[in-house]
Image 1 (cartoon, rainbow, N blue to C red):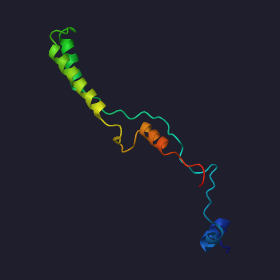
Image 2 (image 1 turned 90 degrees about the horizontal axis):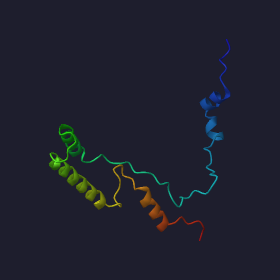
Image 3 (image 1 turned 60 degrees about the vertical axis):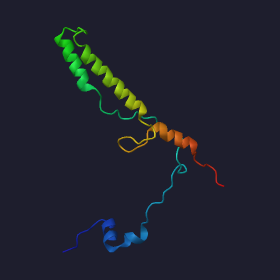
Image 4 (image 1 turned 135 degrees about the vertical axis):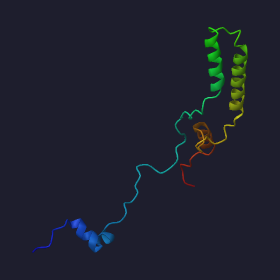
Length: 123
């Protein structure tokens, strides 16, 4: 009875010949490996919406009062106060801080890349 015929690569692999002949491929990039001078402008993920409860209370009041502003003045004022507070917090939030995912915004990355450009010549 004849031995089963395996492909040539299996025979080399089992005998260990692949270790001598095969080496990891050399990295030959088409361009020099260097950082670009800028990154793409990406919209940052918007955070959760603010003042949703105040807005829904205001709209429920409008619906109950046939969209009359006078009886719903307190709810409208509460909603506008909440919006003003959220806007103030958003403006006070420093751009230098990391996003919720731990990444710098693209505008900040571009500023840093302009301050520290890639060295393209060798000294």
